[in-house]
Image (cartoon, rainbow, N blue to C red; front, side, top):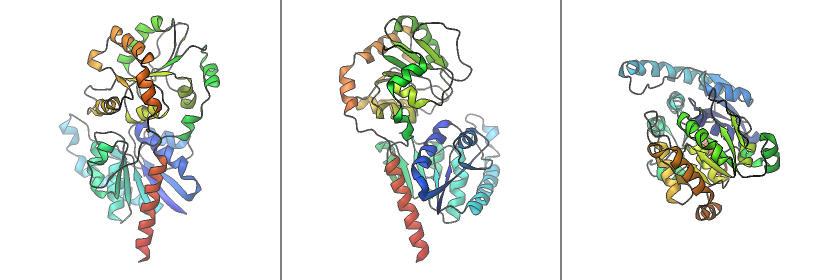
Length: 353
């Protein structure tokens, strides 16, 4: 049986897409995951994926002194990754970005093992820029991102198929909602304090006519008792979350944004654009806005009044709903697996010559 070694970590946005591909590979491949003692280890354990741990060096933005030892640490990380690759003997290494992907990509290339990476955002991340030259293909969610790489191919975004399986009635019952429309509020993997604060301020007004399902982030629950308002710190029940949602207010990380649009949920994006961001969420949102698939509220313009107006504008935006229903944005798993199959086949045929 052929083996695919997956890597990528540092955030759920690097890990969950890999799990989506692993789930769709079926029995044709054995899947092994290489990562650090971070979120990727927990996610793999929860999903029954074999995990190999190593230490990967991370660039600390804005702290020059912390980064002086990176070259020496990177050499060791590549060596450690190579030992795991020698043990696993994969037919291909599949990267999903993040600092965790760099050592495996370098180690695999040195051994003549094909590497494929996937870039979620329009603005490529530093790790994928570094390893692009080591890869057979750089797969992307957005066409514009693919054009930035000589070996770029736009495949769409990886998505877990189970996300599309939720049932509306079961979802409303699960979250204790009546039959009024549900506005889903997402602040990203760790929640957004600024979105949390503003949505709670306007919740009494919104909940006169609508329900709010607020995924607020771990440790960020507030003491609010309001009919129609339900807050959850974190959930593994995303199929039910999406099934419940009639509208969404969200950050614009590529994975969540692609999922919302693929599911035809009219969305208001409030992209992250502070010092923790390289501006990728703004570019993601602008891409979807140019296609008429979302509304945008910039963080610098966020206020209780503006948020309330934009939510009601979203609810009554029939043009957006019509465009969304005709959208071709969909799960990219099939395209990604086709590229994996092609790379593995080419590598094996090369061995036979």
